[in-house]
Structures are given as structure tokens and as C-alpha cells.
Length: 228
Image 1 (cartoon, one colour):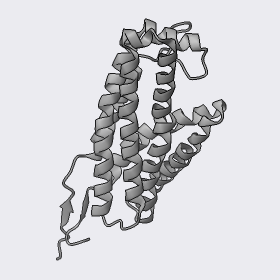
Image 2 (image 1 turned 90 degrees about the horizontal axis):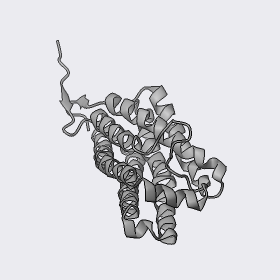
Image 3 (image 1 turned 30 degrees about the vertical axis):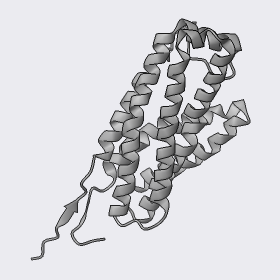
């Protein structure tokens, strides 16, 4: 009777990293998102300029806490990215997919960090008092956290899903889900040209949290001993 032995991947758990990333990001959003009619809401770029400046002048604490937790969420995202790249290579993926995922995930991480630092700058009283500077920083921060998030993270999703599909490392539905998210993420660049397509950004972001958690828990953490 022969016994098949396996080797465990030595590294952080992808599923747990995805949960931590999601929890910190949503915790940050909880400070600026409200479903109460008439309550102040975090502005979008197409709101009147006066509404944008008023929000950051009147709600600096909420904006600051949002930036703090989203800044913290970038750390587990970066670790998830490099761990997923290492895991796929360890499982024998020789194609370029893992490297595309690495590029996308690291770009997303950097954009999040820079965007949060821009948001942190905006809440200082001297900065918030200058309407022109405040609005310029807001648009830069929104770009980094909007399209600057959805486009590169789409590369992360597709870069993991496509090779995982070819090598049957993930269930088919997870692979298809990831590829669809990747396509939506790349298409979200059109939001720079048309306000009506801004919806593609949250369509990448929020379903993406769910996909990362499923993929993180389902991607194999073992391989047969001796396999390369």
C-alpha cells in the first residue's frame, strides 16, 4: 500500500488576510457612509464644489478615521498579493498570470496608501480652509481610491483566476467570478471619461471582497511531495 505525502505551503493564510483586509476597509467606510435620509454623506466628484468643501470642513474626524482604517487595510492587501504570487508559483504555475496579479495588487496597495495620505492632509484646518487646495486634493484622492483602485485590483483578480482555472486550483465558479471582476475592473477606467460609468468602481470593489475571501480559503495550500 503506497502513501501519498504532501507538503504544506509556508506562509500567511490567504483567506484570513482577505477577511482582515475587508473588515478594516469596511470599518473605515462606516465612518463616512450613512443610509439616513438627509444625513451628511461623503461627497462624490460630481457633487457641487460647495458640498465637497463643506463636508471636509464639518466632518474632519469622520474623514480622518476613514483614511486611518483604509490605510491600515492596505497592509493585509499587500501581504495577500505577495503571498498569492508566491503560492501560485509554488503550486507550479509557470505562466505570467501570477506576475500580473503581483503588479495589480502592489499598484492597488500603493494607490491606497497614497490616497489615504492625501485624505489625511485634507482634514487639517489650514488645508480645509483653502477651497481650491481642498478640492484639488479631493479629486486626486478620489482618483487614487476610485479608478486607481478598481483597475489594478482587476489585474490581481484576473491574474489569480486565469492560471488557477487552467490548473484547476480553484472551483470553476470562483475562476469565472474572478475573471468577470477583472473585466469589470479594467472597464472601470472609462469612469474617467463618463460619470455614468463610476458605478463600475463599486461593482469591482465590493464583490471583490467576497471573491478574495472565497479564493483565499479555497486556493490549495498543499502539493504532492516532490512536485515542482
